[in-house]
Amino acid sequence: MAVNEKPENAPEHCPGPSTEQAGKASACQGCPNQNICATAPKGPDPALPLIKERMSSVKHKILILSGKGGVGKSTFTSQLGFAFSNDENIQVGVMDIDVCGPSIPKIMGLDGEQIHQSLSGWSPVYVQDNLGVMSIGFMLSNPDDAVIWRGPKKNGLIKQFLKDVDWGDLDYMLIDTPPGTSDEHLSITQCLKESGIDGAIIITTPQEVAIQDVRREIDFCRKVKLPILGIVENMSGFVCPNCKGESIIFAPTTGGGKKLAEDEKVPFLGSIPLDPRIDKLTKSPQDKYFLPSSPESLHNFLGLQTSIKH
Amino acid sequence: MADTLATHLAGIKHIIIVLSGKGGVGKSSITTQLALCLVQGGNKVGILDIDLTGPSIPHMLGLDGKQVHQASSGWVPVFADENQNLCCMSIGFLLQSKNDSVVWRGPKKNAMIKQFLTDVCWGELDYLIIDTPPGTSDEHISIAEYLKDINPDGAVIVTTPQSVALADVRKELNFCKKVKLPILGVIENMSGYVCPHCEECTNLFSTGGGEAMAQEFGVEFLGRVPIDPSLTIMIEKSNDDNATLENELIKMYTESNLYKVFNKITDKIVAKVTT
Image 1: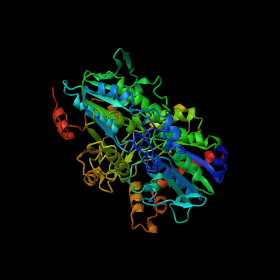
Image 2: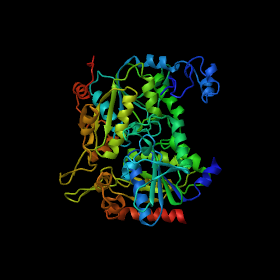
Image 3: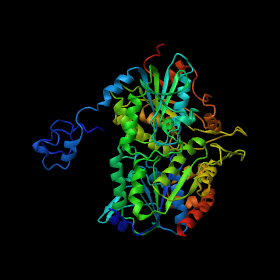
Image 4: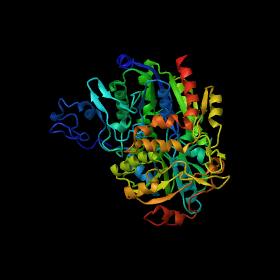
């Protein structure tokens, strides 16, 4: 969180870390934070107004979150993007802020694509006319290159994705995130605070070890006041392609996503079975396996408040 | 810091870091299984969980809700078995409630990792296994930096067979090269699932990708671990409040099929670090 409020153990007349007097007032003498307060940049982030302006042409912003990795955030984001863009009147953008492990280029069939620079900023890579994609994966000279960045550099890139990318008018912006509750998540929620985020879709798998991390993510959403659109349970059950017998691979020992949604009082959007065909998605990403295909029913599925305007 | 850390960790013979660029591939379950196999082989083992925003180790070892104790020499790790051969440290033990989120940016995470290294009294250990979060960012840079002068034995890289996971894991291999962390080998997890009805093996996430990648990068392929729902069940049993000694994870695990598979992998790792 931005350090806007006085810490609990601050000296008695602490002027507040983000004020003009920070680090300079007499109360600051001897405070261990004096140096940090005196040198930290004051006032709001200069990037915020630029982001707000750029984002004013984006109607709905949806975050895809999960505390746990490998549960299908990127797969879901990609499927949702293709499902929305089925209607050619709807403009969709997919932004991948998983800086260290971008999966969106591969999952959406865009391996090896490059970003183009124009006067109005970076142009997203278009899968089809109404579906633009932005990911750090498009900026690496070799796809195997590791992006060995600490937090501040990751935050800088996320800000750039928000203010320097020429998204144009979008009906939906879907934001795919890395696992966890750290730099990327804080940055995206802070940067988009003023523009407003419709909410987060939380992805989980049925087993308790994943649910634990997802509960933490829900706690994060509450802490940063991010609305939760609902929970999707992925990889629930498996139908053997040979004998059609069903089996449970990741056992929902504590009730799975449904129970989690009930406990946390958020909508349960549905469950998606494990499907070995999913690996073929990277070759034909447009194949849809599990989402409603009309944008209206999708809209209802997500329970978005405002209706789609053509 | 380097000197004091070296003396502090002097009682530890081998340090192994479990890494993967991809999340949810089984880093924590591989860490747990490696630890159980090593303990069964007569070693004293410690696990350090540096996944600060998504710690899974406490649950994996049936230690949900346990607390860390403070002694004059530092934090006492939590023991997972009766004979005190397996101990672990995780931020999960420091949270008020297991559902609390840890919303920290990089510098705070780095400080915590440093504290885990300098303030936990591990004592004499044959192996310290470090479980990490996915990615190549703060936690990874920090742990590699802090341990640089102690020369950890190396990293075990975990992947699943499908191309999307491999793409991220290749980045992790390049990370190891960049920070000069030796690679002990690659384990392919979730490799195939045997249908309980017809015994047909389905490659849910395809197969063979891990081996091909290991070859390409010139590192050892340590083996495949199949998807086995019984591991989840064992873990849940050991987390049960009424768990008896019969339900101790290590007892159940050594009787399972997974133990046979994983013991071979463990032998390869042991051979690598002891020669």
